[in-house]
Length: 209
Image (cartoon, rainbow, N blue to C red; front, side):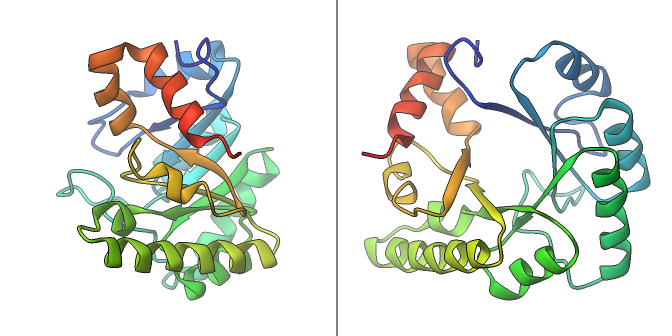
């Protein structure tokens, strides 16, 4: 349904505790989906094996804690830098594009670049959680500056987490951001309008004038 409605990519998260998709889901998706599969996953030996087995179009490396309800922030790339770089290089050798989910922080963006990633996804959670116009604008400016810095390094920039039909119009004004990943709000909106229409509504909301 997402493909029929015009989605450019299907993003899935194979967690270590399997609370979201299962391995069999990933297998079926990589065999049947015509659009790009973006596999979100932690930096573990198990997940590396699945990525090399199913070879999604892109892997987004994310932090993961068993007690969290959902991903709570960007991946901290400062520890284990050599391990991270080796992990990234191995997947890239298999033809997989690597993105890293990071906070809008210059140090983390620089680390993503230095460790070999070609793409990043900026964490928009703080922006989405802002409760005042002032805080929203402050977080938006952080994202603007982060996206510009990442682009200056040659990184392809995506963004996501907590975006919805009410705030996406601000994010789409950041010219360096080439992709938005939206899940929960899209599915919630689908309760009222249907899944395909929900995808279309979000695509329309993302379009730049």
